[in-house]
Image (cartoon, rainbow, N blue to C red; front, side, top):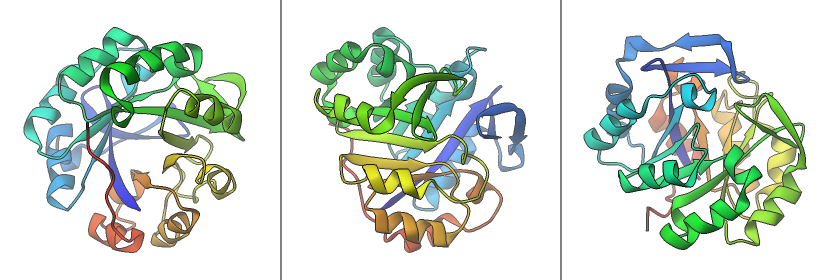
Length: 245
C-alpha cells in the first residue's frame, strides 16, 4: 500500500481542515510554502504528492499558479483535485503535467464528461472522488448531499472504465480518529481505492493495508508528527501504483 502525503492549499498556504470546515483551518507555514513542503515530502520518499486546491473546491478563489509551481519544481508525479468542474479545466491540468486529476462534483453530475476525459487521456490519469458521509456521496466541498450511495456510485463509474477512486470519509477527515474501515472494507475489492480521512497512527495504516486498498492519503498526522513519512511507508509495506500514461 502506498502512502501519499497531502498538500492542501488555501490562500497560498498549506493548511488542514477538520471535516472540510474552513472555520477549522490550521496553517502549517512553519514548514514553508506549498512548493517547499512538496519538495520535503519528495525527499522523504513520497512516490506521489496529493495536491488539493481548497479555495477552488469551496468556490472562493484558486491556487493554480501555486500548483503549477509545484509541478515545475518536483520530480514525483502529483494527483491534483479541488474545484475541477469542467472538461476544459481538467484538460488544462492534464496538459500542464498533472499525473492524475481528481474529479468530484463534476463526475457525479456529469459522468459523460468523465468518459470524454478517459477517452482522451486514459483511465490511469483519471480518479473519481467519492467523498461520503455515512456512505452517502457529498458534493460542493462536502456541503451538499447527493442521495447517492457510495457502492452504487462505484458500480456506475466502473461501467464507464473508471479504475481508481479516492474514497474519503468526510466525518473522519482531519480528526486523527481512524479511517472509516467499514466502508473501505466494502469497496476495496471493487476497484483501485485510495483511502483518505482520519489516519492518525501507524496502527491505522496497518489496518488499512489489510483491507486491500491501493494507497492512502495522509495529512494532519504527518504535519503534526504522529509519525514520519518513512515510518508510514514502512508500516504500509511500501508498494507502487502506476504512473501517468
